[in-house]
Image (cartoon, rainbow, N blue to C red; front, side, top):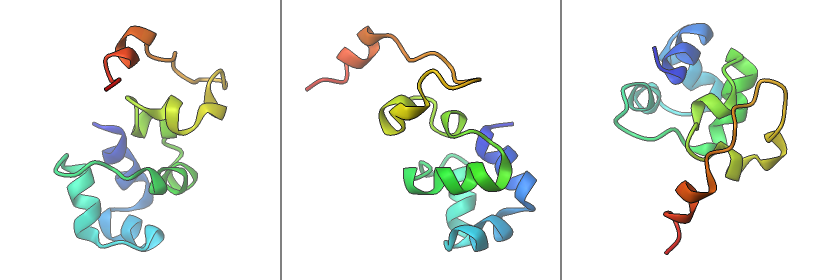
Length: 89
């Protein structure tokens, strides 16, 4: 089960999570089903409501979005610098 699927389940379903976030249940289902990427602005609230960590919700870029979480207890390692260099224009 993906982290967003776990979060949806823990909160009580897509409709309940949508209500907490102020979005449509369809938006939550799109995130859950991988049809759309979960926007950054909802991750902290989802973490607070479901205990699913932000770094699990956004594993590819969490360290760029929330650098204050680098080195936090339980935080994954930061992806290799070589991988980030390939993101450069």
